[in-house]
Amino acid sequence: MDMHSLVSGVVGTVNPFIDAQLSKSTGYTTAPNMKRTPAYADPVAQQIQVQALSAKELQHLDGLNITGVLRKVYLSGDWQSVYRPGPVAGGGDIFSFKSTPAAVAAQNWLVVTVLETWPDWCSLAVQLQKG
Image (cartoon, rainbow, N blue to C red; front, side, top):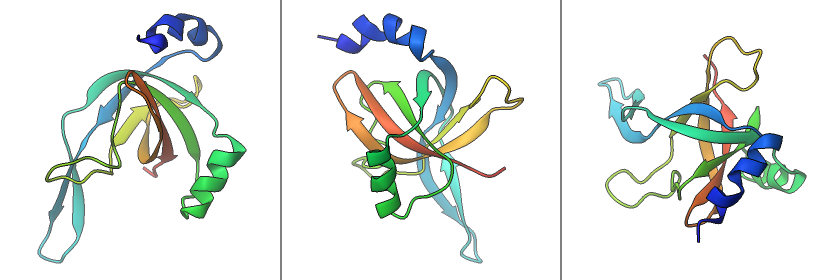
């Protein structure tokens, strides 16, 4: 049973859904000087919810040596960004969304870990990227 769809309307009144673009990592290209440039598939439109991380989640990320501006993103579906079977092992996916209504332009957020996965939704930790 898709419980997330059943309660999303009520949850959305407290933590509204926002539009985002998700670009799935397709690996890297390596230049002759060995500089690696990430490559991405075409962005996919998503409806997400964004909130602060809990103290326990922040402590976990600190233990992984992940710092900076961090948020928790709820997303419909089971997104396996960090662990993805196949030729591209995973990691490096980028969300583009406005973090606040006052933000003029969308910001890019790197998926750093999957926090929870369920058949119909998941939560991810994302880190704000410069530029």
